[in-house]
Each structure stands twice: as structure tokens, then as C-alpha cells.
Amino acid sequence: MTTSSKDVAARAGVSRSTVSQVLNGHEDRFSPETVARVKEAADGLGYRPSTAARTLARGTSDIVITLVPNITFGPRLRDFLDVLSSGLEREGYVNLLRLATATDPIEDAVLGLRPYAVVSLAPLEESDRRRLQRHGALVVEHSRAAQEHLDTAIGQRQAEHLAACGYRTIAAAVAVDAREHRFASPRAGGVHEWSLRNGLHVLPTLYVDLTHEGPAGAVAQLPEVPLGIAAYNDEVALAVLGAAQQLGRSIPDDVGIIGVDNSPLARIATPAITSIDFDIEFSARSMLRAILDHDSRFQDADAAEVERRLRVVSGRSTPPPAQV
Image 1 (tube, one colour):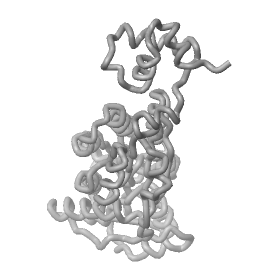
Image 2 (cartoon, helix red, strand yellow):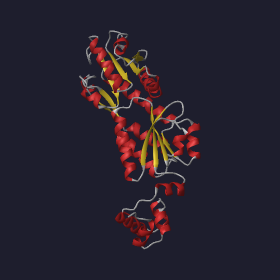
Image 3 (tube, rainbow, N blue to C red):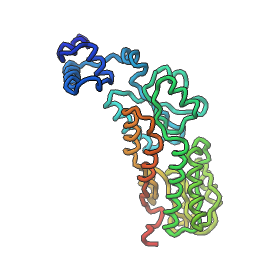
Image 4 (tube, helix red, strand yellow):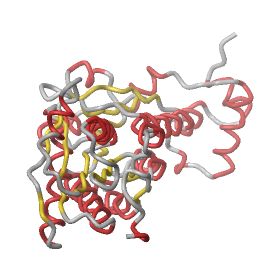
């Protein structure tokens, strides 16, 4: 037998209207005691509000759409999405993932779901943002400026670590794949800017084609001097590591390598790859808090804290700075 809001109202000793408002997010209109009675009655009876009715009442659904940039889908991104999705599920929301393409990340099919919120892991175009907001969706994202600042800071941290390890010649390494360049370009820029400002010799950016022969062809262009490589991510770092070893370059004496993500891939490589680590749980919980608080001001303050929490996880692909 299906439980109705009438049953919940009878058990809690309130009206059906009160049940509807409490269970549809308008708890602030009632006393804490009333809210507790309604929720206890609903839980005891196993009652869940109708999704269709809730969507009709407030104009949006219980769906959150996370737009994932069309880049390498690594294990750390999966970790982030696990934390975000499980947090949303506990609060009664469903997180749907959508691969954001350059052509049309906000199709009519997305808007047809009447999402409560859209989380974008890459900055949206202003036209897309306005379109979502016109349809009542909360938009949670880093601003373009904040994202570029964060990526620049990552490159700077990489260069700083390589310099502390004793390398006086530095190169940034990025994937040839143009889909990665939105994030790769500012990271390489951060490497160049910090290195030049601190008197290091900067080589042209190394473009690595992640194919069978591509990494060796790129690394073969490097001069036969000790140098540090700041790789766009751990995947590029692993490709450079393998190519350098294939070409007889000693790691880390001839070539030092630092990646980004602190992925399992970096930790199980031989030698283990030094990497920049994100506080994934903090980032996911910040976005979750913004969604639950319906706070579009998330954008830049939390991005600054993400930057502050960046840290270098040392592997054997660079020498320990304290011993240099």
C-alpha cells in the first residue's frame, strides 16, 4: 500500500500543506519541533515526496548536473565526483554527469530535466550561464579568471620545486591534444613566468603526443644537460619518464620530472613520480556546500583556498630538495 502525505500528516498531527512545505525545503516557515515531527513521521512510514509534484511546485527537479570537461578522466577526478555525488545523494539529490563539449554543453535535453543546479568543472561561456539561470538552475563553478589563476599557481609550484631540487634549466611538457589546452596553457605559463623571474633557463614548451613513438620524439629534442620537466599531469609525466629512460637519460640526475594530480599512476611508476596534489575532498565539499546553500558566490573564495591547499608529494623522479 502506498503511503501518502495524508498519512504523514495524520501521524505528525499537522496539515498536508505543512507536510508538503517541510519536505520540499521550506523548513524555515515552521518550528524545529514541527519539522522534526514531520520528518520522523515520513521516515517511519517510508514516505517520499513525488518527484514530479516537487518539480511542478518549485520549478526545478532534484537533479544536479555536473558538466565534466572533455579531458583526461583520471582517478582523482573520479574521486572528486564520488565525494560530490554521495554528498548530494544523502541530501536527496541525484547527480548526473555530462561530458561538456565545445559545441553545445547546454542542450535542450539538459534544460528539459529542470535541474536544481549545474556544477561546471570548467568555466562556462556567459551565454550558457545566463541560459541556465533563466531556467532557474543554480550555477556552481570557478570563474574563468579563478581557474586560470589556479592553473598558473600549479605551474609556479612545479617550477619552484624543480629549482629547489637544483635544476637550472626548465621545460613545461603538455599533451598535443587540444582538448587539454584550456588547463595546460596557464600551467605552462606559470612554469615559464616563475622560472624567468627567478633566473632559470627556460626551454620551449615540450608538446608530447601520447602515442607509441610520440613521447620519445619529444624528449629527443631536449639538450644533453641536467634539466627539470614540469608536466601538465601525471599521464604526461609518465610518458616523459618512459621516453627519457628509453633514450638513456638518468632519472633524476639528468632529467627531473614533476606531474600534477598525485594519481595512483604516479605512485606506482618506477621511479615514483613527484606530483602536485589537490585536496579533492575539500574541493568537492565546497561545491556541495554551495549547492545546498544555494550560494552562487562560491566561485573565487573557495578557489583561493584550493590553491592554498596545493602540496608537492615527492617521489624519486626528482631529488629531495633538502639534500641538494
